[in-house]
Amino acid sequence: MTKTYKIEVDCANCANKMEAATAKVAGVKSVTISFMTLKMTVEFCEGADETTVMKAVLKACRRIDSDCEIQL
Image 1 (cartoon, helix red, strand yellow):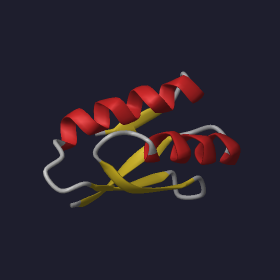
Image 2 (image 1 turned 180 degrees about the horizontal axis):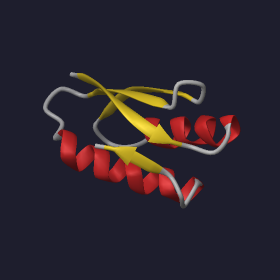
Image 3 (image 1 turned 60 degrees about the vertical axis):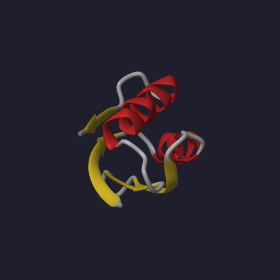
Image 4 (image 1 turned 90 degrees about the horizontal axis):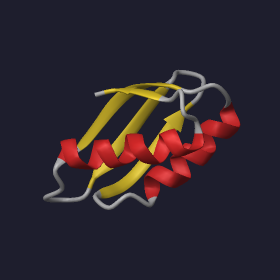
């Protein structure tokens, strides 16, 4: 399953770091963050719980930018 979320991120460098951090979260098959459109596209692993995975993604992203918001 693939879903797209609106994300608030301050700079392209932060977006790249968040993309790398999100890719390491269990349950994430692939991720793309576009700084220009402020969108995050996440492909989940089969059987992964979207809510649990996205909570972990938000936590990982906030380690990079404490102001980060993902509209779930």
